[in-house]
Image 1 (cartoon, rainbow, N blue to C red):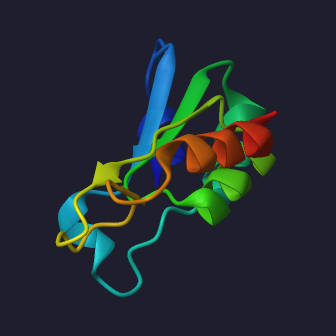
Image 2: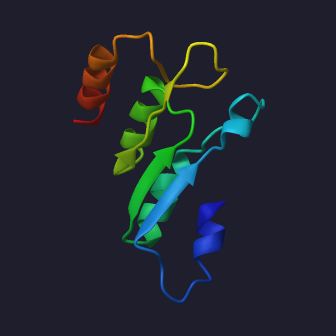
Length: 102
């Protein structure tokens, strides 16, 4: 819970990154709780980034909940990670991401 970590700080950070590690991407129940973004935003004036296995659907959710930055992976098709596959049309997918965050 990022808010629980931030509340006792005497000086809040300038940037908060909500991140799911690669080892957590394939673990059931390990999801980024985007509603935490709104909770952080209601208490702190910080830049918020969401990263780690973010796909187009999650990018929409992150932006909807107030994230300033969304980080997407470019991954090899044989990898078991979530992200844009190197064999995908990266330009088309990048444009979809840009439309999502605009």
